[in-house]
Length: 246
Length: 178
Image: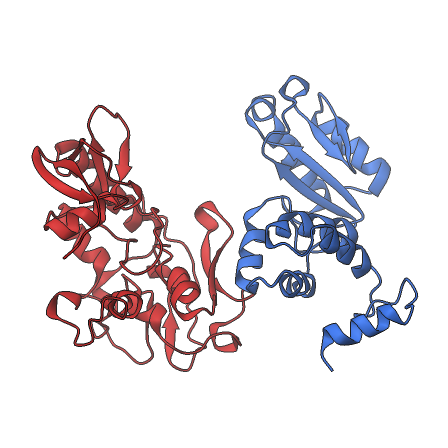
């Protein structure tokens, strides 16, 4: 039994108990309240960069990222309002306009978190001009391929490589519209000496940006839940990986 | 024998100033900054500043050197260095011309200055001319909007510039211009 101290919070008017120090997103996930998210991944640190998981907190005009907001006593949280729906949709549209996301030719078509999120938020067209950036694919690694055209800079790979694998091969270079992922000193991935070929970055990628070599359209499936098992299951003594951990 | 032990041995044996193990004595100045910061990882930006002052630009060798000294992952050092506009990676030209393109300077015609210099010396904004004589840069507001348009030539801040005055200035230092 969990003996952690709790506080009372309200999700869409319904009273719930949240653990002290728990984030709004973690609490909602535990209670089965759906909040969409992209960059969040259980088991690694919080980034708060995708802004898909925004929620309204009573009396505060600003929207808050649920993953980076801690539950405090008597918090009134709204997870589903017209304003939030519109905002999440815009975020998705901007992500699609920023890169070259063409589902029809993507290895992750049908198993893509970005695609799922677009469907979930009802994003059926993009109102912004596509930036159509010219980005080079890095297929120098013997096992994996990196396609920056499909990258949404969620930094899951950066965090998982640093925090779980401990190699810190990945990082983000430059900024704004020029921001992109790099391996080591902006060298081809295949030449990286620190990469251990563990494939955790590929497992956590929410889009088709990181994939195995030789996969055709729609053949790539990622396994982000692997990180939850790696990071948390051992301390929880969950050796048999129950269904919910998958 | 490891790198550190060799270095310590050299230091205790009264090593002369000016023979850095890398063969480039300018690294001594970077080392001095590293020591002053006690090799703390949060000294990365300060160290990169010193390294750029010493070398003029940050080459890959320098970034690797700083990364190893501070025990930081290379990708993180590269990420930090590229994030800041102030760090440059290509060797600078003999002279540098920075045109402010902040709001006030833009309204007063900074774009014309950039275009004028760019065309006269065949150097795209943000790059160095092929012969290495001139680096043309643009800056996002120098904070002296009352002096708009501002041009910084070889470190000297010049106020109320226009295309002609800037071209004269560049011609005086660099010569030529077509």
